[in-house]
Image 1: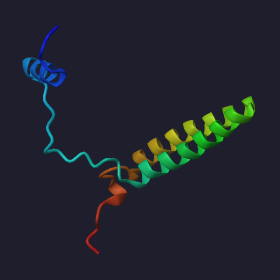
Image 2 (image 1 turned 135 degrees about the vertical axis):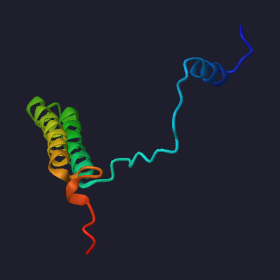
Image 3 (image 1 turned 45 degrees about the vertical axis):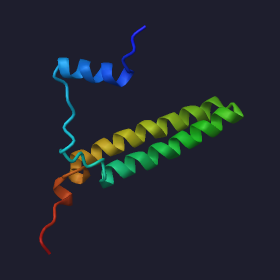
Image 4 (image 1 turned 90 degrees about the vertical axis):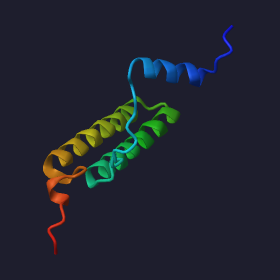
Length: 95
């Protein structure tokens, strides 16, 4: 059995493959109206689906899953409309 730690073997493998993570890049973490709308709608859908699972109601479960898909589509549409991270609707106009 090897005495090397798991993290040491992973970092050695990453160096060997020249895989690195650039921590200087700001990812933004999705702080935008599109991301928040997507997450909130999907959380509501997950809540409905969870309650339906507990009460064993298949139609309500499917409705909750459909709400989650709608939330995903709504977030994508809002991102395309300019409400995503660095979107055109969120640019400061200088006023």
